[in-house]
Structure formats: structure tokens, C-alpha cells
Image (cartoon, rainbow, N blue to C red; front, side, top):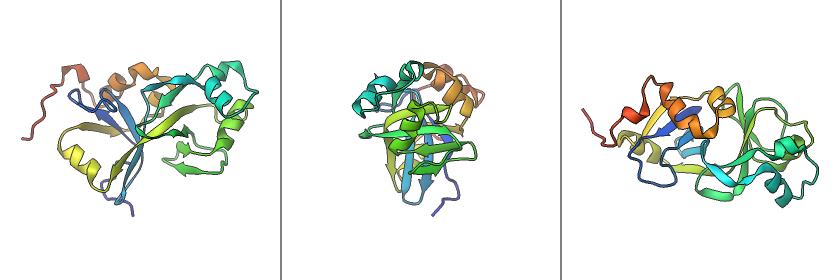
Length: 187
């Protein structure tokens, strides 16, 4: 069941004082948020793999070397052995979930095979693992001022270097994240 105040298709931007090393200085795209919990993909944490190395692990031998240089992201601490492809909408893949009119999350091998052959989505972010929250957990973290929230931006996901995404996402709110205190409070 969809929540009235869902964070789906929003960026969660970790506040400067975020102590959890999995999320310190992170930007997480919330892909799904309902009364059962939330699922997101961290979009600004590089893993130690390139797409060429991931293709090698999956025995996908033929691919354009240029796409092979693409960095694979660490999508979150849950199920780091599972792959996810966040991409522009379009195509028909075995296991996909629409996030918005312009974004889709696919978690089947066929999209990677299509990308290797040059027939996949032109704009894509590949991640291993995801971020997950149990029912009510994300709402509690928001109340505790652990995160800022802003509408997701395809430009930040696909056109911004991953090292700049945290600062740029906060600028979407009209603030400079470096000027925020790590101390949280309520008025």
C-alpha cells in the first residue's frame, strides 16, 4: 500500500553528522516506499569494481571497452551480492520496477547483457546492494533529522560525477551542505 507521504523518487541526503559509515555523506534514491518499508540505491559510493570486471564475473565476454570503464556503485549494505541497474525508462527487461516516468530500476541480467552489446539504456547507474528500511524506520530517521529530502534529479544521477552528487543534491534545496551543523534539533 502506498503511503500518503511517500519518499519514493526522492533523494535522501545524509546530514553532515550521519554516524553510520554506510551512509555518511551519501545520497540515496528511494525507489520504493510503502507501509512495509523502503528500498533505495546509494548513488554516490563507488565500489571497487568497474563494469568490465563485473561483466567478467558474469561471463559476459564481449562488450564495448568504453562501457567497461564505467564505475559500479555500492548501492547499500543490504545484499551486496545482488546487482541493480538504475536507468532511464524504456526497454522491456525481465525484472523491472518503475520509479517515475523517467526512471526504472532493473534487477535482472538481461539489461546488463543488452548494455554489453550496445542495445541497453544509454543512461544507467549500476550498483551492487541496496539500502533498506523496515516499516516506520525511515519515517523515524526523518524525524530524528538524519536525512534531508529533495525530489530526485536524473541530471544528478546520470550527468554528475558521483563525487559531486552529495553537494549538488543539497544545492537543489537551496542550501550549502557545508554550512549545516551536525547537531540536530527540533523547534
